[in-house]
Length: 125
Image (cartoon, rainbow, N blue to C red; front, side):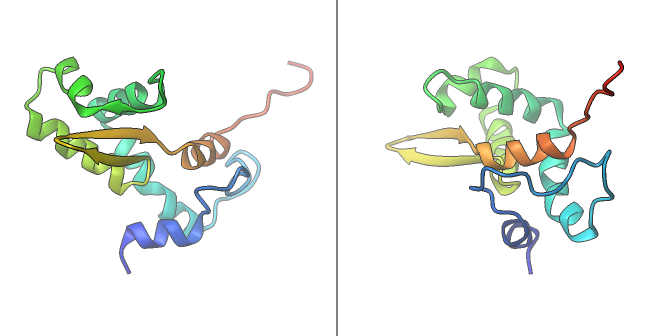
């Protein structure tokens, strides 16, 4: 079984609810850690983190690869590789329109990653 299919079977990426309690409240199960680790790993690269930020903050909710590539001092194939990594990690969806590919963030997985890292402030802080 591939890591991608494992991730999709353990987490409902379309659900509006977190996958699990924050790691500060409860130990994360091994299966959940294995399912979410590729997304964290994908975001561990500075270029991919910047790409994710550009895609997630796009005013129309999506952005064309033609708008992403000029923002970096990297070749087109290198940007495509980084975007493929984000897609395979389940962080973005892509849609080809003619010669261009448009990317949009997947809010479900982003909410799950954020909730996992959520830290509640102590009441008396």
